[in-house]
Image (tube, rainbow, N blue to C red; front, side):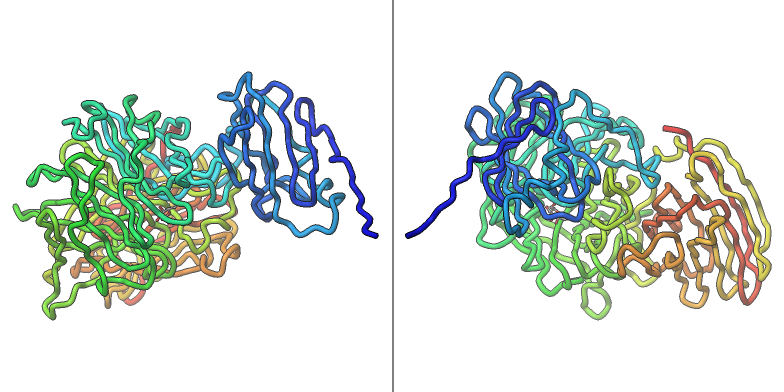
Length: 602
Ligand code: FRU
């Protein structure tokens, strides 16, 4: 005879207005009975994701994955209930942990810590949150994408997880700015639907109403990602704040992984052009369209070319003038992960020609296509440009992290910042090749506060010259340094704090390189891939270098020779860096100019 034991589902009240019913070892139902704008979800970073299906009046409204707390609560994330006001809300929660009985499941820290509230505190609780870089208010961020400029406003979207500080639940977070340094934060602009999560893409202002959504509608094209990756469009008639997803989606399907569509209006051929990363095939595909809805595949570029070690992601294609000439060339930006010059993710690019359907890269004297990097640091990825920037500018921004350790960096309330915005240019180098420069956007001079150090024509030899960094605002600053290194073998620029943590930038005269050593920069042990020395060619042979160094609590961006080379690296000093010292070996170096600026409170 079979005996069965049937127990009634047990009901407990988590807090006022939240009723929790455990149905089994991995299934719990949470009913919202009370009032409150947000249901606060307790998160434990190290736990596995629970799947939360949100039912409104019995219909599935959304499904989100949240690392619901098991043994301790690291932080809370809000589930916004405002649009459900007056409706029945039930969460069907499926957890994944192995459990022997339901009692264990009931003990999870999350259930007793669920609560309803009308406020969610987003004031900064992080010592490493940058002061003048873009960061999300809370939650995880990767790729900046979908950026467009319209009516004096720079719109920035980003891959955002509003339900935790690790990658998940991709939506388009949205910020905007009129000066590229002060950012306003807006509600998520595009959220997942039945076709999948919202991966990276691009937006354009459709001035001629080619898509039929209205003159000047903003049209976004992005990857809907679930089991497969397909391309979808959405449009906005309120300057990119809210988007309506196109019912005819998907607009592009392929049989293999393809993502991150990036489009522009091709004035020569009067149609839209789109680059799409054919990720695992290590190539970019080019499509054209008259109306943003119907796309025709024209060509592919990349197989066997440039760095091939990782998947190809986040393309961008644009035309620039070569400095000092009337020559125009096309740049194909191609982010790769892994396979960067110092491990993990990085941004390579190709310079060449594009005739409206096909991209052809320049070759060197031996007929090979050289690999070129946009940034020689470890923390520069998914970089793409703004569509429609004013004054013919090509303004770019990247994600200031690396997929190797982005989820492990010592922050919790938010994870990841974007780089400073940069202006792209092209220059011809002594090797005959054309390279892309990326200099700090001109708006950045407006954040300088006081000139706290100003020095001219001082020499630095074995005995180091020491200068103070600002003490205000955790030492955030900009350093301008022109060095003549002709008599020295090597010159060290050391940025240090009182805990003996430091970054050493070393100019090496013999090969004209600048290295960035962050092995002793502060907290480095959260990942074996973090301690590193990165090296950049300086693209000058006269042993003079001109640097602009931006320090912002947990990052250092070094722009050399007006953006001819850049190194972006994260650093996590336990206390702010407070000194800059310069010394040289082999002979002395001349500090032609040194200026240190503190930064205004933004
Ligand atoms: C690049 C990337 C993109 C993708 C997005 C998902 O960092 O992998 O290819 O669209 O992140 O968040």
